Amino acid sequence: MPDETIRSNSDVVLIGAGIMSATLGVILKELQPDIKIEIYERLDVAAAESSDAWNNAGTGHSAFCELNYTPEKADGSIDPKKAISIAESFEISRQFWSYLVQQNKVPSPENFIRSVPHMSFVWGDKNVDYLKKRFEALQSNPIFSDMTFSTDFKQLQEWMPLVMEGREAEEKLAATHMEIGTDVNFGALTRSMFNYLEKLDGVSLFFNHEVKKLRQREDKSWRIKIKDLSTGKTRKAYTKFVFIGAGGGSLPLLEKANVPEGNGYGGFPVSGQWLKCTNPEVIAKHQAKVYGKASVGAPPMSVPHIDTRVIDGEKALLFGPFAGFSTRFLKNGSYMDLPMSIKRNNLIPMLAAGYHNIPLTKYLIEQVRQSPKDRMKALREYLPTARSKDWKLEKAGQRVQVIKKDEKEGGVLEFGTEVINTHDGTLAVLLGASPGASTAVGIMVDLISRCFTNQIKTPEWEAKLKTMIPSYGQTLNDKPELLAELRKHTAEVLKIK
Image (cartoon, rainbow, N blue to C red):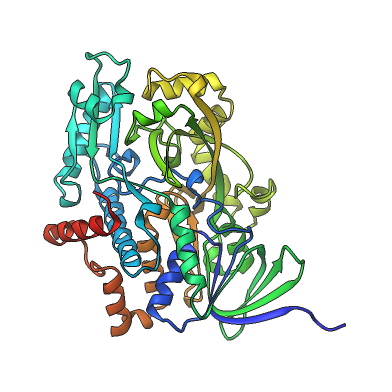
């Protein structure tokens, strides 16, 4: 009987049709128009998992309002380093998206980005003092110079009328405000980029295709075995470079690749839910992303926030996320994902990380046990006048936090995004969650610098990167004039403030 396996050859294989693969695919195609790319996605559409608008906060994560990016040190001072780094990275994304819009590679920016002010809001003496210190630590940096701080009741009413309804003037409250914040529909942006990529020569996008095996051959190229879920047929793809950007599905694929760089990595899944407002009158009263302080032991993705969203042209209002626990690594995954991910090389790091994160386990148990009454109580801390009949519970996305080996602790739980690449640069994997999508461009440019080391040094690639990202190779926080010029330009192109 003849072998019916389909075979194909390419320069690059991207696994997972989310924001990361879309971004990497477009950048590589711009840098090298004749590059041959194949994209494989298990589901029947792009951006159906973490990149989908309902599965993430939609915050253009720029560290304007997210308090977990500015930890308080033991001496009481605020460390702004991570916030500055994330803000810089979001400026890179803005530049790249502006390039795509100007070049008509993606349609109207209103489809994926809108102006929505970013605010941090706290109450109580200790938290107000923290927010003031945070404001002072950030606002002295050019990248945060537009930030304002207030404890004035009337000012807070102007900034966030819905949040202030039902509050007393003598309450100890404070907020910071950044007018240039954004709401981003990463699902719409991802699909627009894939629509552009699909039209280009040398790009093939396969939906309903699940990667079953990855094996590196002696010549350092990769052989990938893929199953067509709609026909049951097998496909073998041969390629020089593999990127695994499959969200929660990345860790099992990294394990299948069987590379030494993947040893010791594990994953801890955290699910999410939103309270979604169903009353148009309430939705109309709020126009901001208002972030608060996370509960003790809560993962960063569970920082509570009351969010204005614009999805498919419609304004929405969400509160949450409420964390939960599931053994699935993907919203459309299997309950066997977590147990099947435990191997000999990551067992100790996973047990150690569990031991060192008992408060997180306790927090997740409490979240899973929450009743509708408990969730409304949490909402009323932000919206004192909220009525149960105006809100319904919606399922959000699934995230897998990274667990990795640590010499001191045995294993640590990481809450950011992490790129792992093989020493020969032929395979790269993105693990982790927030602030992922917002900083996708910076993450992918860094990945290219690690895995395409010779090409990125060429004058052609460097010139093209500077065309797509004018600040490429520079930092903006120490160049206020360039920052102001680029912010003005990207705001005009993207039609935001």
